[in-house]
Image (cartoon, rainbow, N blue to C red; front, side):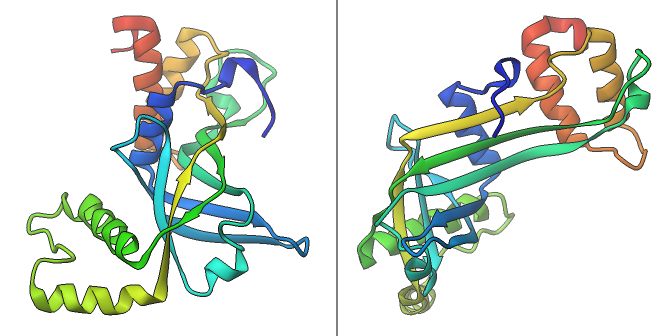
Amino acid sequence: MRHTPSFVLDDPAEIRRLVRDNPWATMISHTSDGELVASHYPVVLDEDSDEIVLLSHVGRPDEQLHELGRHELLVVIQGPHGYISPGWYDASPAVPTWNFITAHLYGVPELLSDTENLQVLDRLVDHFEDRMPVPRRLNATSENAAYAARISAGTVGFRLRVTRVVAKSKLSQNKPLETITRIMTELEGSGPYASPALAAEMRRVHGAAEGSDLS
C-alpha cells in the first residue's frame, strides 16, 4: 500500500476500533511453493491483550492451503469506502478519487487446541449475537453445545499477534474544510454514490480535528 504521510493511520486504538467495526477479513498467504492463497473469515480482537491480537478460525482444509503457522499471514481489514466525484470539489480542473480506511495486519498465526478453538468460536458467536433481540448462544442449550462441539472439528482456530501494521485513513484530509463538508453532505444524500457509513467515518475523523465546525 502506497505510503502517504497525511493519510497514515498509526493509532493502535483506532486500528482496534476498525477491527471491531469491520470483522469480515481477507486473509492472504504466500505459500512455500510460491502461490498466493486468499480466504475470507470473521475475526475478533483478543480484548484481554493490550496489544493487537486477532482470534479467528478457518474451515478445513484452508489451514493446509495457507500453511498456517509456518509463515507470516496478512489480514486485511476494510472499513467504509466510496467514490468521490470531482463535481463535489470547488477547484477546477479536478479528478475523482476514492476515500477509504483500511489496515494490513501481519503476524505468524498460532494454532489453537480443540478446546481453545471452541472457546474462540463461542466468543465469535457472542460478538455478533449480542446485537440480536434474542441472542442464540453457541452453548445456550446442552443440545446446541453438543452440536457446536461436533461441527467445530471441521475448523482450525488461530491466534494472530500482530507484529507489523500498515494502515491508511484517506478521508479528504488534504482538502479544505468547505470541500470536506460538501463531500460529507453528498455522501449523506440520495445520489448514486451516497454512503452514510463513509460520511459518518469522515465526520468522526474531521470532527475530532476541527471541533464543532463540522457539526
